[in-house]
Image (cartoon, rainbow, N blue to C red; front, side):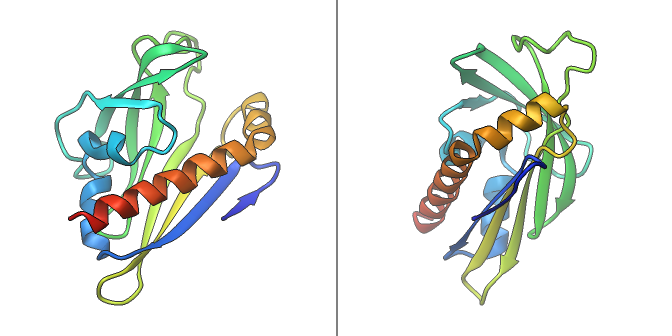
Length: 165
């Protein structure tokens, strides 16, 4: 795991014993996200469609102690089948920032898949908060260890899902 202090970028990686295409299918299916979420915040996907291109939007039902139940509208900003997928979350229904001007914080979740032989892939998960307002970047930087634990757990759960296939 690595991180970039002061920029609110947190990166975790793990080698998973599955081909990149199989891992990508899981990542592109919002209905599967709660299965590998290491934070425990995702409750369910509210969008039944699988992500198929940049510009798609999928909704996730979430719960966070500070906000309660809410939704996030995830705008797909990166999409390269079998290689890379990423989205920019924006506050949705029930989120306290949903109606605030500039409510989107500018962060992104990105997964890069690097094949490592025929049946293995290095998965790199990036939380990129470099576009977030300064106060939000500071929160990420001060809670870096928490972010890294959640991301490591996410990759561990993703590996377990792939092993069970």
